[in-house]
Length: 444
Length: 159
Image (cartoon, rainbow over all chains, first blue to last red; front, top):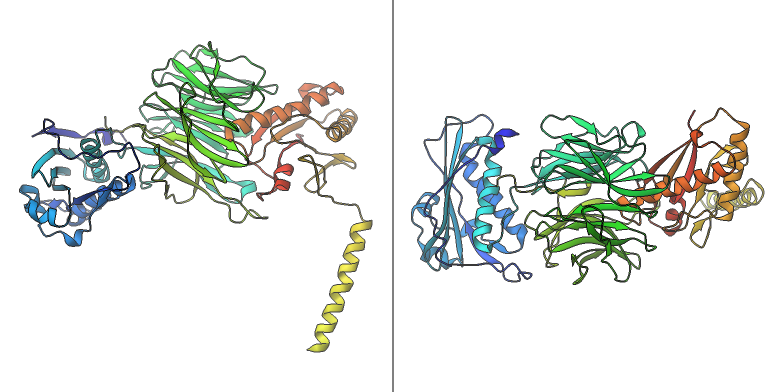
């Protein structure tokens, strides 16, 4: 896992000075930008590799980039059949007239060389109308990392064209679900943001729920029913070592990391009452944050760590509250029609995403952290548990379908949606899936 | 062929009459709700003859109904007579709530039942509690009836 972070980035010819094409992402994009992603040229001097088809690698990388762009709804990758220029020549000097003839406004070219078990990748982004290079970058990494290279290139292009941080070089941790509804088998699973490279982290012998990454994506906190004692656990993804968090005499649940990764915040239930606690991972010091006879759960820190939003039924039904991180200054912020759960603070700090239930329908929505500006993004029979993309532009959540008498027709799937309310799409998973949690960018 | 069909029809009528009379006479298994609290006996199991193993709740509620208190008093009687027996109280929620809140709600329901057993003289040391939230429904249908059967606290023998 460590070697994934061994990526050399060499910058050359950065011309941020020119303001060229720009993609407006603040609204649902009805007119996606036509972009041509030329297959990357594979240098003929490349070594052969056992596990990777080197000759096809240029095509593979460009198709990963294309599918990333397509998934944003902001770009329209053009059909390669219409490309007239050879990849190697296009990468040196594109004939812009030809590319503009097929309506491309942006062009991506590149080349790769594999030597001594190192993959060297170079790519350029061109503004076709202005006939100018916008970005050029080169990377060196291990050949098995080629998908990550494709995601990093996608991020660089997305950043250059939208002015926002990318989110393609990321992973999602989730709960894989199999078996009948009454005896669901649940396993922790991790995958790339595009659904590829799935790895299962637990065997399914015990129920596991609500995994969440720490800020460096190496640790995961989650709820496990190991030995029928539902407790919050900490898992090191690299070593596979798991440990119980704290020494509580009853159920702990709804865990999340603090933004600095030093604490875990969670609920502890005792005698029918759930309150919010934190545990410092180094000193093991436990602190009680809320003290109320109602249910207090689903805590989530603001990105600066100063505030916490959480879910409580102290006013009767589930509503969203905020407080200072020491538990003072508790304020209810949800006042709309219906009940509210699962508040999660956006990585940008401005918005809180939530689940809302009204008249038997489930909504994913966002509101400002003072409770104003509520916007519902999507409505369905059942959906909940939004998690933010690291750039705060998308939410991933899970959705369950209605089932018949023997549970037939029941599915649980992961979906994502833009905070504009546009571009709702399913993220394909091998099994049914729930409780997704998005990592931060792997290469920062 | 015709004859066969006739016999079949006759058999169907005969069997359904039998089945109907069986329903009306044999120990009844009922299905029903009051408000939205399940009042039937489908899905219910028994700790001993006449001692139901579970109580049901209204949506978002952990209040014990009159019928639930009656069931729990019978459980307390039974536990008083079986002094060596420990139990686990399992609290459950339906699938119509968010997962984390449902875990807390299941814990609250199980404790409501535990508290009632304790007021009838059963030591808290004999009763442990576990919440499954919405993770272990008994009825997997997405219907109001199924949801009412799933909102429950079940007393399970632990030894």
